[in-house]
Length: 419
Image (cartoon, rainbow, N blue to C red; front, side):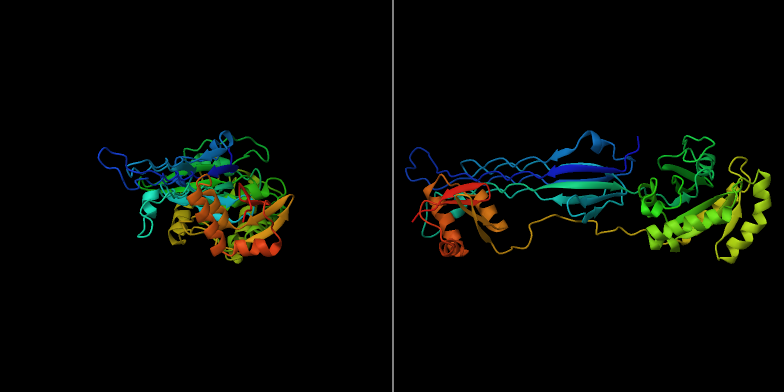
Protein backbone atom coordinates (compact mmCIF):
# COMPACT_ATOMS: atom_id res chain seq x y z
CA UNK A 1 0.00 0.00 0.00
CA UNK A 2 1.15 3.55 -0.77
CA UNK A 3 1.57 5.66 2.37
CA UNK A 4 2.34 9.36 1.96
CA UNK A 5 1.63 10.49 5.54
CA UNK A 6 2.88 9.29 8.91
CA UNK A 7 3.20 10.44 12.51
CA UNK A 8 6.21 9.34 14.57
CA UNK A 9 7.86 9.99 17.93
CA UNK A 10 11.58 10.79 18.10
CA UNK A 11 13.84 11.22 21.12
CA UNK A 12 17.51 12.14 21.24
CA UNK A 13 19.80 10.46 23.74
CA UNK A 14 20.52 11.61 27.30
CA UNK A 15 23.99 12.85 28.10
CA UNK A 16 26.04 10.62 30.39
CA UNK A 17 26.62 11.67 34.03
CA UNK A 18 29.89 13.24 35.07
CA UNK A 19 31.93 11.35 37.70
CA UNK A 20 33.08 12.46 41.15
CA UNK A 21 36.36 10.64 41.74
CA UNK A 22 39.85 11.03 43.23
CA UNK A 23 43.11 9.31 42.48
CA UNK A 24 43.66 6.33 44.75
CA UNK A 25 47.11 4.95 44.18
CA UNK A 26 49.79 3.54 46.43
CA UNK A 27 52.19 6.15 47.72
CA UNK A 28 49.85 8.98 46.55
CA UNK A 29 47.93 9.81 49.75
CA UNK A 30 46.42 13.06 48.46
CA UNK A 31 45.46 12.21 44.88
CA UNK A 32 43.64 14.95 42.98
CA UNK A 33 40.17 14.82 41.40
CA UNK A 34 39.98 12.54 38.37
CA UNK A 35 36.26 12.22 37.58
CA UNK A 36 35.64 12.11 33.83
CA UNK A 37 32.87 13.71 31.78
CA UNK A 38 29.80 11.87 30.58
CA UNK A 39 29.37 11.19 26.87
CA UNK A 40 27.12 13.23 24.59
CA UNK A 41 23.67 11.85 23.86
CA UNK A 42 22.99 10.65 20.32
CA UNK A 43 21.32 12.96 17.78
CA UNK A 44 18.25 12.32 15.61
CA UNK A 45 19.14 12.72 11.93
CA UNK A 46 16.97 12.14 8.84
CA UNK A 47 18.65 10.92 5.65
CA UNK A 48 17.15 11.13 2.15
CA UNK A 49 16.92 7.80 0.31
CA UNK A 50 15.89 7.85 -3.35
CA UNK A 51 15.21 4.09 -3.28
CA UNK A 52 12.30 4.57 -0.86
CA UNK A 53 9.00 5.56 -2.45
CA UNK A 54 6.53 5.39 0.45
CA UNK A 55 6.27 6.12 4.18
CA UNK A 56 5.02 2.59 4.91
CA UNK A 57 7.99 1.84 7.20
CA UNK A 58 6.83 4.58 9.58
CA UNK A 59 3.48 2.88 10.01
CA UNK A 60 5.19 -0.31 11.13
CA UNK A 61 7.54 1.47 13.56
CA UNK A 62 6.47 4.69 15.25
CA UNK A 63 8.97 5.26 18.09
CA UNK A 64 12.61 6.17 17.39
CA UNK A 65 15.27 6.76 20.08
CA UNK A 66 18.94 7.62 19.79
CA UNK A 67 21.56 6.12 22.11
CA UNK A 68 22.37 7.55 25.54
CA UNK A 69 25.82 8.84 26.46
CA UNK A 70 27.84 6.62 28.81
CA UNK A 71 28.67 7.92 32.30
CA UNK A 72 32.15 9.22 33.04
CA UNK A 73 34.57 7.20 35.16
CA UNK A 74 37.61 7.65 37.37
CA UNK A 75 41.10 8.28 36.04
CA UNK A 76 39.67 11.04 33.83
CA UNK A 77 37.95 8.52 31.59
CA UNK A 78 35.19 10.17 29.62
CA UNK A 79 32.02 8.30 28.75
CA UNK A 80 31.39 7.17 25.20
CA UNK A 81 29.02 9.30 23.12
CA UNK A 82 25.57 7.88 22.44
CA UNK A 83 24.94 6.51 18.96
CA UNK A 84 23.28 8.96 16.58
CA UNK A 85 20.11 7.55 15.05
CA UNK A 86 19.92 8.08 11.28
CA UNK A 87 16.38 7.62 9.99
CA UNK A 88 16.05 7.03 6.27
CA UNK A 89 13.13 8.71 4.53
CA UNK A 90 12.09 9.02 0.86
CA UNK A 91 13.35 11.96 -1.13
CA UNK A 92 10.46 14.40 -1.18
CA UNK A 93 9.59 14.07 2.52
CA UNK A 94 8.45 17.11 4.49
CA UNK A 95 9.01 16.95 8.26
CA UNK A 96 6.67 18.99 10.46
CA UNK A 97 6.22 19.62 14.18
CA UNK A 98 3.14 17.54 14.98
CA UNK A 99 1.63 20.01 17.44
CA UNK A 100 2.28 23.33 15.69
CA UNK A 101 2.42 22.19 12.06
CA UNK A 102 5.68 24.14 11.64
CA UNK A 103 7.75 22.94 8.69
CA UNK A 104 11.09 21.76 10.09
CA UNK A 105 12.82 20.14 7.14
CA UNK A 106 12.44 19.41 3.45
CA UNK A 107 14.36 16.41 2.11
CA UNK A 108 14.98 17.03 -1.59
CA UNK A 109 18.21 15.12 -2.33
CA UNK A 110 19.44 11.56 -2.06
CA UNK A 111 21.85 11.30 0.86
CA UNK A 112 20.84 14.68 2.30
CA UNK A 113 21.17 14.66 6.10
CA UNK A 114 18.98 16.83 8.31
CA UNK A 115 19.71 17.12 12.02
CA UNK A 116 16.40 17.39 13.86
CA UNK A 117 17.20 16.84 17.56
CA UNK A 118 20.52 17.30 19.34
CA UNK A 119 21.47 14.81 22.01
CA UNK A 120 21.82 15.92 25.62
CA UNK A 121 25.15 17.37 26.74
CA UNK A 122 27.33 15.08 28.83
CA UNK A 123 27.72 16.12 32.48
CA UNK A 124 31.11 17.42 33.61
CA UNK A 125 33.17 15.37 36.03
CA UNK A 126 34.71 16.88 39.15
CA UNK A 127 38.11 17.19 37.44
CA UNK A 128 36.55 20.04 35.45
CA UNK A 129 35.67 22.05 38.58
CA UNK A 130 39.19 22.42 40.00
CA UNK A 131 40.04 26.05 40.83
CA UNK A 132 42.68 27.97 42.75
CA UNK A 133 40.43 28.02 45.83
CA UNK A 134 39.05 24.50 45.55
CA UNK A 135 41.66 21.88 44.68
CA UNK A 136 39.45 18.90 45.55
CA UNK A 137 35.90 19.69 44.39
CA UNK A 138 33.14 17.21 45.18
CA UNK A 139 31.08 18.66 42.40
CA UNK A 140 29.92 17.15 39.12
CA UNK A 141 26.94 17.28 36.77
CA UNK A 142 24.44 14.75 35.61
CA UNK A 143 23.95 14.43 31.87
CA UNK A 144 21.45 16.70 30.16
CA UNK A 145 18.24 14.90 29.18
CA UNK A 146 17.60 14.37 25.48
CA UNK A 147 14.78 16.09 23.60
CA UNK A 148 11.58 14.46 22.44
CA UNK A 149 9.14 15.40 19.72
CA UNK A 150 6.19 14.08 17.75
CA UNK A 151 6.65 14.63 14.02
CA UNK A 152 4.36 14.36 11.04
CA UNK A 153 5.93 13.21 7.79
CA UNK A 154 4.40 14.13 4.46
CA UNK A 155 5.65 12.72 1.16
CA UNK A 156 5.50 14.77 -2.02
CA UNK A 157 6.69 12.71 -4.95
CA UNK A 158 9.67 14.27 -6.71
CA UNK A 159 9.02 13.88 -10.40
CA UNK A 160 10.02 16.06 -13.33
CA UNK A 161 6.64 15.88 -15.01
CA UNK A 162 3.16 15.41 -13.56
CA UNK A 163 0.33 13.95 -15.63
CA UNK A 164 -2.96 15.49 -14.53
CA UNK A 165 -6.49 15.25 -15.76
CA UNK A 166 -9.95 14.00 -14.98
CA UNK A 167 -10.54 10.37 -14.03
CA UNK A 168 -10.40 8.00 -17.00
CA UNK A 169 -8.49 10.48 -19.18
CA UNK A 170 -5.91 7.78 -19.91
CA UNK A 171 -3.06 8.88 -17.64
CA UNK A 172 -2.14 5.38 -16.48
CA UNK A 173 -2.29 4.08 -20.04
CA UNK A 174 0.07 6.84 -21.15
CA UNK A 175 2.51 6.19 -18.31
CA UNK A 176 2.55 2.50 -19.16
CA UNK A 177 3.14 3.25 -22.84
CA UNK A 178 6.17 5.48 -22.28
CA UNK A 179 7.87 3.82 -19.28
CA UNK A 180 8.37 0.61 -17.36
CA UNK A 181 5.70 1.56 -14.81
CA UNK A 182 2.84 -0.91 -14.55
CA UNK A 183 -0.12 0.73 -12.78
CA UNK A 184 -3.42 -1.15 -12.57
CA UNK A 185 -5.69 -0.01 -15.39
CA UNK A 186 -9.37 -0.57 -16.10
CA UNK A 187 -12.02 1.27 -18.08
CA UNK A 188 -13.73 3.22 -15.32
CA UNK A 189 -13.09 6.45 -13.36
CA UNK A 190 -10.91 6.52 -10.23
CA UNK A 191 -8.86 3.50 -11.31
CA UNK A 192 -5.61 4.89 -9.96
CA UNK A 193 -5.87 5.30 -6.20
CA UNK A 194 -2.23 6.18 -5.64
CA UNK A 195 0.43 8.12 -7.57
CA UNK A 196 2.60 6.12 -9.94
CA UNK A 197 6.10 6.97 -11.14
CA UNK A 198 7.71 6.04 -14.42
CA UNK A 199 11.11 6.79 -15.97
CA UNK A 200 11.05 7.77 -19.64
CA UNK A 201 14.21 7.30 -21.69
CA UNK A 202 14.79 9.40 -24.81
CA UNK A 203 17.68 8.68 -27.21
CA UNK A 204 19.33 6.22 -24.77
CA UNK A 205 20.72 8.99 -22.57
CA UNK A 206 18.08 11.60 -21.82
CA UNK A 207 15.65 10.60 -19.07
CA UNK A 208 12.82 12.22 -17.16
CA UNK A 209 10.55 11.00 -14.35
CA UNK A 210 6.80 11.14 -14.92
CA UNK A 211 4.19 10.93 -12.17
CA UNK A 212 0.67 9.75 -12.90
CA UNK A 213 -1.40 11.79 -10.44
CA UNK A 214 -4.79 10.17 -9.69
CA UNK A 215 -7.78 11.68 -11.45
CA UNK A 216 -8.89 15.04 -10.10
CA UNK A 217 -12.50 16.06 -9.68
CA UNK A 218 -14.27 19.34 -9.08
CA UNK A 219 -13.77 20.41 -5.46
CA UNK A 220 -10.43 18.64 -5.11
CA UNK A 221 -8.74 21.82 -3.83
CA UNK A 222 -11.21 21.85 -0.92
CA UNK A 223 -10.42 18.24 -0.14
CA UNK A 224 -13.34 16.64 -1.99
CA UNK A 225 -12.61 12.99 -2.63
CA UNK A 226 -8.87 12.57 -2.12
CA UNK A 227 -8.08 16.03 -3.49
CA UNK A 228 -5.51 17.31 -1.00
CA UNK A 229 -3.82 13.91 -0.73
CA UNK A 230 -3.11 13.89 -4.46
CA UNK A 231 -2.66 17.57 -5.30
CA UNK A 232 0.44 17.92 -3.11
CA UNK A 233 2.31 15.48 -5.37
CA UNK A 234 1.98 17.95 -8.24
CA UNK A 235 3.71 20.76 -6.34
CA UNK A 236 7.25 19.50 -6.95
CA UNK A 237 6.84 18.80 -10.68
CA UNK A 238 8.31 21.36 -13.08
CA UNK A 239 6.10 20.59 -16.09
CA UNK A 240 2.51 19.36 -16.29
CA UNK A 241 0.97 17.20 -19.00
CA UNK A 242 -2.71 18.09 -18.83
CA UNK A 243 -4.36 15.07 -20.44
CA UNK A 244 -7.85 15.53 -21.86
CA UNK A 245 -10.26 12.69 -22.60
CA UNK A 246 -11.11 13.00 -26.30
CA UNK A 247 -14.19 10.82 -25.79
CA UNK A 248 -15.60 13.05 -23.03
CA UNK A 249 -18.76 15.08 -23.47
CA UNK A 250 -16.99 18.44 -22.94
CA UNK A 251 -13.16 18.10 -22.86
CA UNK A 252 -12.70 21.89 -22.79
CA UNK A 253 -14.86 22.19 -19.67
CA UNK A 254 -12.77 19.43 -18.08
CA UNK A 255 -9.61 21.40 -18.84
CA UNK A 256 -11.02 24.58 -17.26
CA UNK A 257 -12.23 22.68 -14.18
CA UNK A 258 -8.89 21.04 -13.47
CA UNK A 259 -6.97 24.30 -13.98
CA UNK A 260 -9.27 25.97 -11.46
CA UNK A 261 -8.60 23.22 -8.94
CA UNK A 262 -4.83 23.55 -9.42
CA UNK A 263 -4.95 27.32 -8.90
CA UNK A 264 -7.21 27.05 -5.86
CA UNK A 265 -4.86 24.58 -4.20
CA UNK A 266 -1.66 26.49 -4.95
CA UNK A 267 -1.61 29.64 -7.03
CA UNK A 268 1.93 28.81 -8.20
CA UNK A 269 0.57 25.80 -10.09
CA UNK A 270 -1.33 28.19 -12.36
CA UNK A 271 2.05 29.44 -13.65
CA UNK A 272 3.56 25.95 -14.05
CA UNK A 273 4.60 25.00 -17.59
CA UNK A 274 1.71 23.00 -19.03
CA UNK A 275 1.34 21.02 -22.23
CA UNK A 276 -2.29 20.29 -23.02
CA UNK A 277 -2.70 16.89 -24.67
CA UNK A 278 -5.89 15.54 -26.23
CA UNK A 279 -5.90 11.75 -25.83
CA UNK A 280 -7.79 8.89 -27.50
CA UNK A 281 -7.25 10.01 -31.10
CA UNK A 282 -8.02 6.41 -32.06
CA UNK A 283 -11.69 7.19 -31.37
CA UNK A 284 -14.03 9.18 -33.71
CA UNK A 285 -15.17 11.57 -30.95
CA UNK A 286 -11.57 12.66 -30.24
CA UNK A 287 -10.90 13.22 -33.94
CA UNK A 288 -14.00 15.42 -34.12
CA UNK A 289 -13.01 17.42 -31.03
CA UNK A 290 -9.37 17.92 -32.05
CA UNK A 291 -9.62 21.11 -34.21
CA UNK A 292 -12.03 22.77 -31.74
CA UNK A 293 -9.90 22.00 -28.69
CA UNK A 294 -6.66 22.97 -30.44
CA UNK A 295 -8.04 26.38 -31.42
CA UNK A 296 -9.26 27.20 -27.90
CA UNK A 297 -6.15 25.95 -26.11
CA UNK A 298 -3.71 27.78 -28.38
CA UNK A 299 -5.87 30.92 -28.19
CA UNK A 300 -5.43 30.74 -24.39
CA UNK A 301 -1.65 30.66 -24.88
CA UNK A 302 -0.94 27.01 -24.03
CA UNK A 303 1.01 24.55 -26.20
CA UNK A 304 -1.17 21.73 -27.55
CA UNK A 305 -0.80 18.32 -29.16
CA UNK A 306 -2.98 15.26 -29.72
CA UNK A 307 -2.12 11.59 -29.18
CA UNK A 308 -3.44 8.10 -28.75
CA UNK A 309 -1.84 6.45 -25.73
CA UNK A 310 -3.26 3.11 -26.87
CA UNK A 311 -1.83 3.09 -30.43
CA UNK A 312 1.19 5.33 -29.77
CA UNK A 313 0.12 7.95 -32.29
CA UNK A 314 1.95 11.24 -31.56
CA UNK A 315 3.34 10.00 -28.21
CA UNK A 316 7.03 10.23 -29.14
CA UNK A 317 6.68 13.74 -30.52
CA UNK A 318 4.80 14.75 -27.37
CA UNK A 319 7.66 13.46 -25.16
CA UNK A 320 10.23 15.54 -27.06
CA UNK A 321 8.11 18.64 -26.54
CA UNK A 322 7.83 17.88 -22.84
CA UNK A 323 11.61 17.35 -22.57
CA UNK A 324 12.23 20.73 -24.21
CA UNK A 325 9.83 22.41 -21.77
CA UNK A 326 11.55 20.62 -18.89
CA UNK A 327 14.99 21.85 -19.96
CA UNK A 328 13.68 25.41 -19.92
CA UNK A 329 11.89 25.12 -16.55
CA UNK A 330 13.63 26.28 -13.33
CA UNK A 331 14.86 23.70 -10.82
CA UNK A 332 12.74 23.25 -7.66
CA UNK A 333 13.86 24.89 -4.43
CA UNK A 334 13.50 23.22 -1.02
CA UNK A 335 10.69 24.62 1.09
CA UNK A 336 13.12 25.32 3.97
CA UNK A 337 16.92 25.34 4.30
CA UNK A 338 18.53 21.90 4.13
CA UNK A 339 19.84 22.03 7.70
CA UNK A 340 17.28 22.57 10.46
CA UNK A 341 18.13 21.82 14.06
CA UNK A 342 15.69 21.87 16.96
CA UNK A 343 17.68 23.43 19.78
CA UNK A 344 16.96 25.11 23.07
CA UNK A 345 14.71 28.12 22.84
CA UNK A 346 15.97 31.53 23.83
CA UNK A 347 15.82 31.72 27.61
CA UNK A 348 12.47 32.93 28.84
CA UNK A 349 11.91 34.43 32.31
CA UNK A 350 11.17 31.86 34.99
CA UNK A 351 7.72 31.71 36.56
CA UNK A 352 6.59 30.71 40.06
CA UNK A 353 3.13 29.31 40.73
CA UNK A 354 1.40 27.91 43.77
CA UNK A 355 0.79 24.23 43.14
CA UNK A 356 -1.07 22.01 45.60
CA UNK A 357 1.03 21.72 48.73
CA UNK A 358 4.01 23.58 47.31
CA UNK A 359 5.48 25.82 44.63
CA UNK A 360 6.28 25.17 40.96
CA UNK A 361 9.27 26.93 39.36
CA UNK A 362 9.16 26.88 35.57
CA UNK A 363 11.89 27.93 33.17
CA UNK A 364 13.88 25.99 30.59
CA UNK A 365 17.30 26.91 31.93
CA UNK A 366 16.61 26.23 35.62
CA UNK A 367 14.82 22.97 34.79
CA UNK A 368 17.82 21.87 32.73
CA UNK A 369 20.23 22.75 35.55
CA UNK A 370 18.06 20.89 38.06
CA UNK A 371 18.03 17.79 35.89
CA UNK A 372 21.86 17.87 35.77
CA UNK A 373 22.38 18.32 39.54
CA UNK A 374 23.45 15.59 42.00
CA UNK A 375 21.16 16.50 44.91
CA UNK A 376 22.51 13.68 47.07
CA UNK A 377 25.82 15.51 47.57
CA UNK A 378 26.05 18.52 49.88
CA UNK A 379 28.53 20.32 47.63
CA UNK A 380 26.34 20.10 44.50
CA UNK A 381 23.25 21.00 46.57
CA UNK A 382 24.98 24.17 47.79
CA UNK A 383 26.07 24.91 44.21
CA UNK A 384 22.44 24.63 43.06
CA UNK A 385 21.37 26.97 45.87
CA UNK A 386 23.92 29.50 44.59
CA UNK A 387 22.42 29.17 41.09
CA UNK A 388 18.93 29.88 42.48
CA UNK A 389 20.21 32.99 44.21
CA UNK A 390 22.16 34.19 41.16
CA UNK A 391 19.12 33.81 38.89
CA UNK A 392 16.89 35.63 41.37
CA UNK A 393 14.70 32.59 41.97
CA UNK A 394 15.36 32.45 45.72
CA UNK A 395 14.31 36.06 46.17
CA UNK A 396 11.24 35.54 44.01
CA UNK A 397 10.16 32.50 46.04
CA UNK A 398 10.62 34.43 49.27
CA UNK A 399 8.56 37.30 47.91
CA UNK A 400 5.85 34.87 46.80
CA UNK A 401 5.59 33.57 50.38
CA UNK A 402 7.57 30.33 50.46
CA UNK A 403 8.10 29.00 54.01
CA UNK A 404 10.71 26.68 55.52
CA UNK A 405 9.56 23.13 54.93
CA UNK A 406 7.50 23.96 51.81
CA UNK A 407 7.87 21.73 48.75
CA UNK A 408 9.41 23.30 45.65
CA UNK A 409 9.01 21.56 42.26
CA UNK A 410 11.54 22.25 39.51
CA UNK A 411 11.13 20.04 36.47
CA UNK A 412 11.01 16.45 37.75
CA UNK A 413 12.82 17.36 40.99
CA UNK A 414 10.96 17.63 44.33
CA UNK A 415 12.88 19.79 46.84
CA UNK A 416 12.23 20.99 50.38
CA UNK A 417 12.79 24.67 51.10
CA UNK A 418 15.20 25.31 54.01
CA UNK A 419 16.88 28.18 55.75
